[in-house]
Image 1 (cartoon, rainbow over the protein chains, first blue to last red):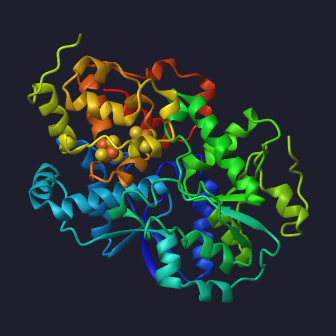
Image 2 (image 1 turned 180 degrees about the vertical axis):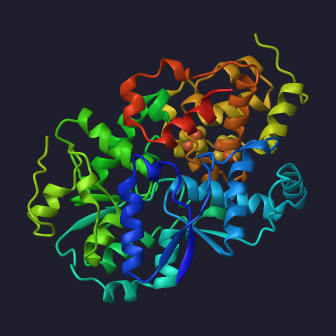
Length: 294
Length: 132
Ligand code: SF4
Ligand code: SF4
């Protein structure tokens, strides 16, 4: 199976481990992710203003790229790209006047016809591959590993862009189960990490991180799995401010790659309090490496 | 005493036009405030912002902190029993300042450490939400 893939800016720079582990794991599952030949930044956040069509150009241009590639589905794994592209797509599918305006403005492009579906990698794993098939391909079951699935905001809100019914987040839990680990439910699975307030109000993000880590730990989790590079950064970096409140944070695709026996790109993780390697090492899931808690 | 205009002022119309929401629908239940992870960092709650906006209290609304500490998480939007997309109202309130060229963040003042640490999606979304 071949699917159009948009990695996004962050996956080509700070979150290369997310991009590379995604491509490796999907390859092992027989899904070839074909990167769009010429994608652009989606704008990172969906514009909420009704009178602002300008900021829909960036996401819709990417949908034109997917259309050119002949793909019916455009896959993303970055939660921010997913939400922005999916919402822009819904907006122009439901408002033909807005689509006409955008198509007229982008007159150097072929018209976007509204036939592309934006999907998150978790949806591909659930709907195109299937949990049982994934379980059948596991080489290295992640036994005795208790993982809290942290979905964040953008996979479940708003409801029209959600990957599943928002009051019942389970896709990531199901994946964790399929790869042999134990999913841990905790109260903050879909609460906000503070998001872009990391720039203007970092204390907000520190408070959010404290709450999320505390509730994950009290629920018995040993590790947090995420899909969003901003959740990852916020939950990881702020542990430096939180003393003993430590919890490894990892991309779910890295766990998947590890279970499938392909390169999980864990070597790209920086050594920090949230480094997942010492825990994985202590469980015998990866070979001894030089990483230590600092 | 602040003068309260019972009719839709230009300010109310503008908030409704940008957000696409009918703010008159709010019946002050406070569910949005209870859903908001960041209310403690602000001076007024989301519910209180909605009330002030309904009453056309432009200065109070534009000077309050809540729209600026909002992280666009959409918890309020997901839970409002009146179906109001409160996150869009927050965006409208921000834009009414930003469109006057009053920025909340100055990219030039960010420390090297912040720039080195944060991923692009953090920077770009902050600039999208907090600068004109
Ligand atoms: S949840 Fe909705 S109805 Fe209730 S106070 Fe907030 S905006 Fe008003
Ligand atoms: S979108 Fe903003 S106002 Fe609404 S709950 Fe989230 S942080 Fe609070």
